[in-house]
Length: 236
Image (cartoon, rainbow, N blue to C red; front, side, top):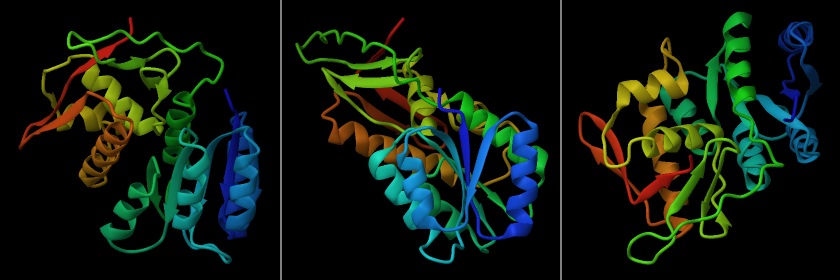
């Protein structure tokens, strides 16, 4: 499992204590002060979590997030923002971020978020599950919780950690409704203080990826309650 935490932050007053705290907790933590080096450092392949400031001196943090997602759908991305308003935060999640924290933030809370993202980092050496056909002859969506990978036939559907966690919860009970509250508590945090719009954005991205991957599975909204999945099976 990748173990490096990459801090992309230009403010020395924030980056220095953050690096010390991460290293004291046993993480291999490194820092870059601009977005372009952050993209290239992540591309090296050993990064498990990126802590990403939005206000960088060279390119916007949202652009950094979007570019990282083009080549790595699984690295955990935690956005740090001092920007006011919900819009920036939701847009950040829409380009592929897994989580966000508003400045100023507590180091204990940030460490908890990093631990959660690192635990969900995807192993890369697991074998692919063998897809099984549905009754109508089409290959079912296959979700393997051990390798945290998803396939339709022999094609992998690349998901972020939050997208995978939402999908895994839904396929545990195919056809049954999973409430919004349970998804927020288990995929994010029972003490999550942000907007539940983050769940809607994540489900929207998940739907699009399943559709783009020609998956027979569909995430159905049960208005005012939650979501259910139809046409999916989970690996044992």
